[in-house]
Image 1: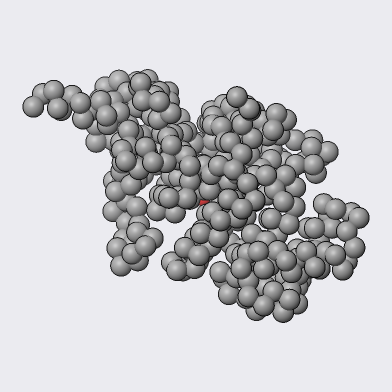
Image 2: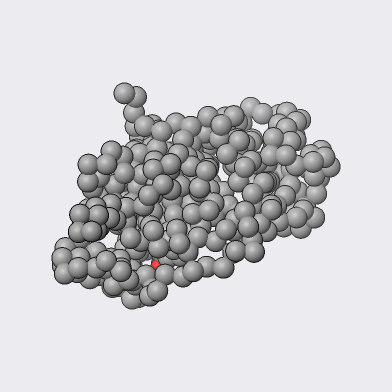
Length: 336
Ligand SMILES: Nc1ncnc2c1ncn2[C@@H]1O[C@H](COP(=O)(O)OP(=O)(O)OP(=O)(O)O)[C@@H](O)[C@H]1O
């Protein structure tokens, strides 16, 4: 079997803060194959963005952050990249698109210049003319109409959806093998969200790119990811092939999250049925399962021991729960 493009093991990101040590990502492991999409979902504060940024090598540069564990990208550990590795991989073989495209675009720089600069940073031999031609081609790839005219405009002259497409074009400029998309459509209205997400899926397919699709909304990853990983309080609580996951969830948190899913296709049903209680403060550690204080099925053991991600005999469908829903269901069936 060939090695996965991304092989993450026991990845842990800790921030030293005035409130103490904040463990935002805690012993996270997963694999991502070439051309596949892994959806990372969870409530706000569950550690999804920090995970994406850590895989991208952005957190290890922060003075108050410590990263342990490994992120093997095509066999090379990039968890704590040195300057040379950073230049070779980040923003080159791995690219990221952010939630708010405006914050990553310079308001006084033309759209085209954002792209040509990225192109020429990664290919020093590229002439200005060739960079311009490639930038217009990229704007066309991300379905921006009249790309030659848009090349010469400023970010504020474009709509939110267009700016996000520009963010995607910049990310694609170096032909990455892995794209990390952190809440790529949160700032957009519902119909534009769908177009941008469909576009990302199509580009992954056309270009054989792998993607980490980070979202608080299961509706965003449904139908657009090969695998789903559910994060809660820094840990992966459930991981499965998408079709299995959406057919049946094994972890009570995943089920609650699915019940709380806003409906992307039907904005009239966009209200959230929220999960009672709040996620734990990552600066405050306590024994047992992190979801125990909010879990409907909690039992004594859950408050004492931390469950690990186990498949419970169901191939490729792990849940970090002592009493996964499949077990609860079969006990109920037996007792009827
Ligand atoms: N630089 C930092 N210093 C200290 N704590 C941080 C830092 N960055 C993130 N955190 C903390 O790590 C936890 C996880 O944050 P993260 O942004 O990854 O959550 P998230 O799941 O992406 O949520 P959201 O969807 O709201 O962005 C939060 O408690 C956050 O406050």
